[in-house]
Image 1: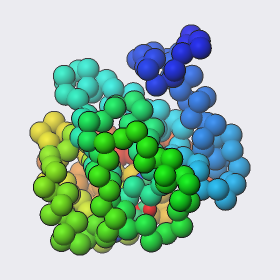
Image 2: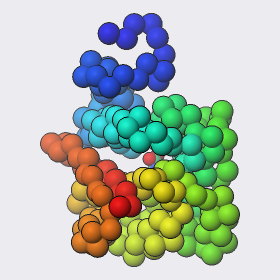
Image 3: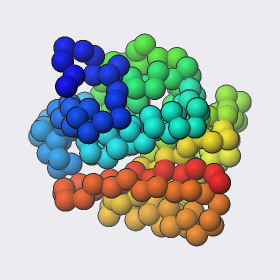
Image 4: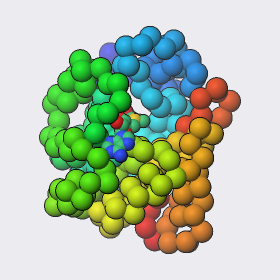
Length: 222
Ligand SMILES: C[S@@+](CC[C@H](N)C(=O)[O-])C[C@H]1O[C@@H](n2cnc3c(N)ncnc32)[C@H](O)[C@@H]1O
């Protein structure tokens, strides 16, 4: 039982800690993904399923321990207001974060600023397809963890995977978000194509049963 202690510093590979973590995450997530909030319009909710993101954190933490490989450098493609970024940063205390986002959709400025704080963060505020963006991201590579969550069309995610997956470090993990989201079938299509190449070890994290479905896909070069 974790009592009166900072939840992020108490990680334990145990069922009891996972229960506490899921409970905590439910307060930041909307009812449509199993959380305790209704959509408020404030754009400050975590766009994750609490069960999936807890499973992801557990997988990554155990991967670090098992492989003596640490997620020090993180590239997030589709930074948005940085809410997931902050959650992951609290757990992994990244030494360097590079975020890419053109910020062309509605993002709350206050939420964005609150999620820029206390990080070693470089933000590329441009289109992921721009050659300057790719060059800048490459100049800071390799990354131990790459999270692809920007343009969810088939062409969009295919280009992001093609342009940014070579920037992953040996033993690093690439994550695709929304592999099970029926609104974004192109993500699943790319996932299936990557699987067919047999070049990668792949793991799917998916919590079904809620109106909004995400699905997190992990890709590790063999
Ligand atoms: C689903 S949101 C990302 C959510 C964020 N990863 C999180 O979990 O908190 C997608 C973001 O990708 C950005 N985006 C979409 N297409 C893009 C592109 N071609 N270049 C740069 N950013 C893009 C959007 O501006 C949006 O903020």
